[in-house]
Image 1 (cartoon, rainbow, N blue to C red):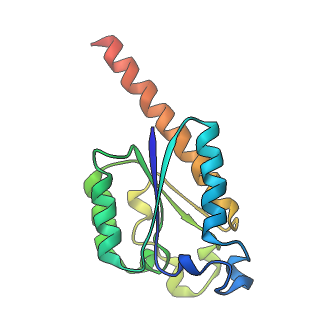
Image 2: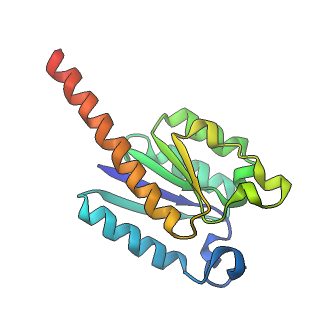
Length: 156
């Protein structure tokens, strides 16, 4: 099982940028915690961060045939990117949208996600722990997909 974690713009600035909203934890620290969960569950994990929308779209497309699921924090592109939405829809991999802050309690323009309806679910507002919850959710989804495929193979 392989999970690709895709991070959008400005997440490379975690720990520096608006710590009153996003906290003091750096992206590398979040990734290290996710690696530990992946190792405990025998899951391969890959990380990607870009400030560029097209690079994020390219990475989503590269996941087809390479990853079993995607955890994505599109950051500001959450609210604007039809391209990221379309890429997620095109690859048809299970995806979990994650946000550090509670986007529903922020500015009005942040309350709309262009991608939530093409994801299995959204986890937001738990700080860096949102990523841990996303990992647990994705592992559960992938285990269920594996069980269904095994049952289908058995019945074939």
